[in-house]
Length: 472
Image (cartoon, rainbow, N blue to C red; front, side):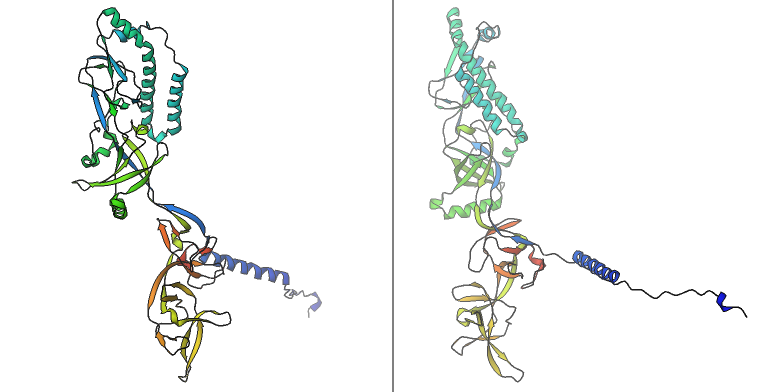
């Protein structure tokens, strides 16, 4: 028989539970569950109510209409201007000369007129022109560069022409006959050295095609051009009264007509900001609809014409409306139903003296009792209160205090509001919207049942229910 002492058996170790490891596993599993729940749960985001404003301003490109008189040349020859574009000319001021033979032009090109120097005032005029263009330049409107080039050339040539004006007298004297014709302004006005075919347009002439700037052409008048008798050579803007006409959508027209009916003598004025220089002015509103059904709004001004005398298309912003109040996102706004009861049935009671009603209740045996039920007020009219529907039910009877009169709760109404979460739960607050756009609304502040600045509301009202506790 084999010796059992030589037989080797494997020893089974007892299970050794490490309490630290068990705690770690429990914590690890808890963290994993929390992370999974976090990503599966919709998170309620709060929003701090702040004061702000919204505007319904709209930007348009309009056509400027002015009293413009096109002046034609009485002579044939080479023209030289002595009036700067945008400059006011009085009756009798020299505007241009016409050199019938071209000798003055040759005289200038040959340099026989001597050295032309600009005075300090002349240089100041040029600096003003350049600085003005630099301040208002917009790279999106590169066409303004060509207008600027034309204006500077006109200014320089005008200043130089004054220096050689005495040479023109010398040429006339040498020839014994008047070869240089001097032409002065017959009327007073602002000198413009271009035409575009829009000079005689009125509001009633407006068509949509006139607003297509790619088809718009402007003809400039420049020094030393050869002109024939009867050719246009400049134009005068003779009145400070002018207007800008815009194409308007039906919503704007309807709004302006409504405001026009409210205005004294049906005269409506709208504030306008000129985007060129950010100046503002009030324009008188006139509305016209042509045969094609296109709507046009004319804004008439009594000043600032000289600033825009060379511009036909002008960008403006209509400063129609600006409402100030509490600015909130539209996603926070919700509609909620409430019971409506006469004011006489609402009283105060309970330990804290809160608002509520005396509700008629029944026990299991059918015995009637009157119980005070606290219910907040969310809105009021002259005769009624809007009460919460979470405690009361349709068909409940309430009793008027100190009487036996009863009222059956049936009537309901809807209120617009947001969920206030200052106290940690979703508490409905009524709002009164002053103005809104696609993203935000401006509401009245410090209303009896509404919001105040710095209140905390639910950003997305669709994610919560009334009186739901908010966990952050």
